Amino acid sequence: MRHAQRNHGQYTTVTASLAAQSEQHGSALFDRTANVSTDTISVLLVDDHALIREGLRHLFSLEHDIRVDDEAENGFEALRKVRLLQPDVVLMDIHMPVVDGVAVTRQITTEYPSVSVIMLTMYCQQQQMLQALKNGARGYLLKTASVKEVAHAIRTVASGGMYVAPGMTEAIVGELRRLSEGNTQNTEELSEKEIEIVRYVAAGMSNKEIADRLSYSEKTVKNYLSVIFQKLHLRDRTQVAIFALRHGLLPYEEL
Image (cartoon, rainbow, N blue to C red; front, side):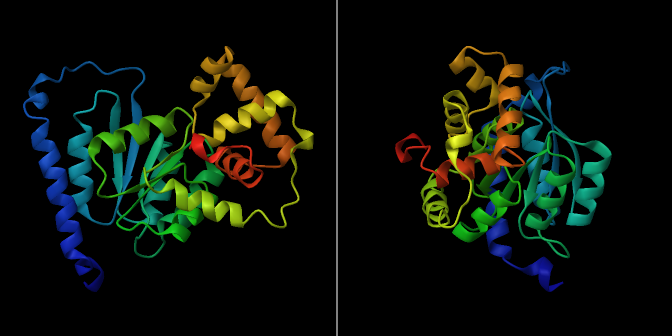
């Protein structure tokens, strides 16, 4: 009961924001056709507040390329449904009872590297952001974000990119630079082209965007990334981005 009552005012504000954004879509509900795109992004909503899940589900129904497959109210249920559904994207509340969102994200991304997790939180906390990214999250958003921004983040991570809410990047960069001491990895193992791709990954570009920039196919970019992962002993794009920032491979102005 105490948990259900925590931060009631803040969640009321979030709910009101969701409702207001829904009204802004106006009659779009009635203009929606029954056609389903083959490029639809499947999403699992994870939040211990039913009102938040219901609001997001309704708002995403207005997006032609985003489909909410299911919901979960805690970490254990989220993991079970990811194993069952293997959605493209998991929208994960960072604070939940029993198991927190960061721990669940680590398990999900370990078992299913192709599943992209976006963390949702009420608070902008630097250490929390870094911890989430280090544990496999590909996105980090405040619950006060607009539906347009959340939808953009979903599309970005689903296409292989990373997304951090505007205004939060500087704190992450500063922290990652402070963590650079004692790092044993170096760039000598990488070719010039591999370093270029590492820069693009750290800038949050998707495989398609990198392919377009280099005039390569997406398959070629994926092959390059596989080699980069192997050479640097890294697991995913998030770790590559951290590597790039630690080694000064991304000028701050590009973020």
